[in-house]
Length: 78
Image 1 (spheres, one colour):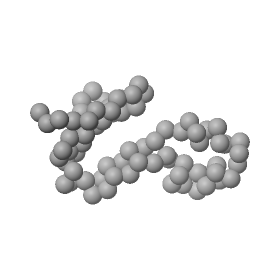
Image 2 (cartoon, rainbow, N blue to C red):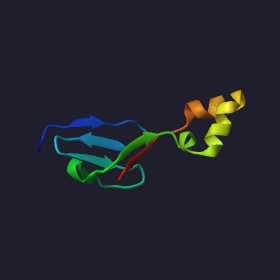
Image 3 (cartoon, one colour):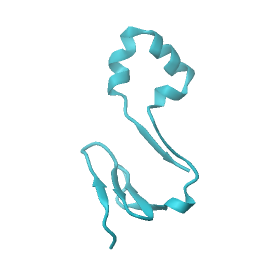
């Protein structure tokens, strides 16, 4: 097995980085899914509100700041 960098935090997906691939285990899925780096066309890491009109409206209101700070990130591999 290759040396890997391992990321694990309660309430978040478990991620292993290898030289040639990334393995992700979702919170609601029991197995790791492998993604080869040469097959990944796009990798996005963002907060859901950043990519929507609703997010823009949230950014205008100081009342919603509390929710923006605690919003979870999304990891999208395409």
